[in-house]
Length: 192
Image (cartoon, rainbow, N blue to C red; front, side, top):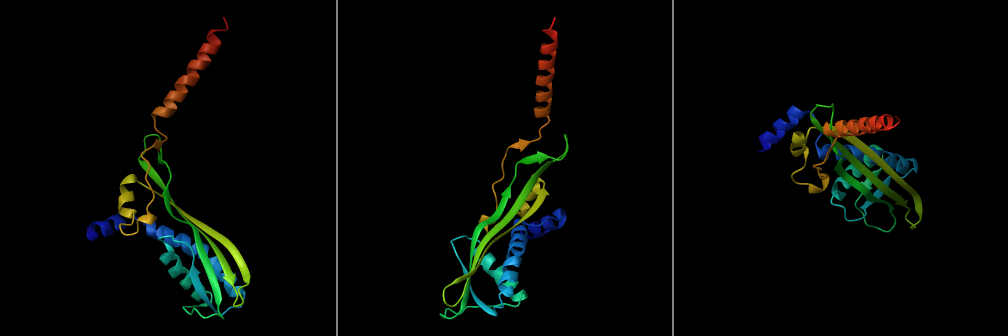
């Protein structure tokens, strides 16, 4: 099973849903880490707010981004520490409506990974020093057959729902063209 999964990734060349979410979190967390570092703070305690299933990923990437910005993340729960509260407002992958790349082309599924976070930096006295809201989006288009390979089998919150509806069918433009042609014909034929 794992061989099929790895082989599928090699053949598709596409990012998995988890990779897309991770990239979106990194892009959203970067400005937050820079703003915290700009405050001249050397160490913070990180607190992930809310009950989102992806809180662990946010915590892991926030720790890494803060470290890269020169801010040490402490596990200390002492009273005289800076605290960075981060709440995931949106975190996951959703699928847009399936469409065709050309009139007779293969079906394509647009994937949108998004991360929006709200962050608040609180000083040791309990004063809010900084509040910010950052977000990032990563987009990709794959065939419907690749979706199963690229979804996470362990982290279900990363997988969006794939719609069976399809836009861009060949029948829809033909029907619209036929109706418009019939209306134009009726309009001009009734003028006699």
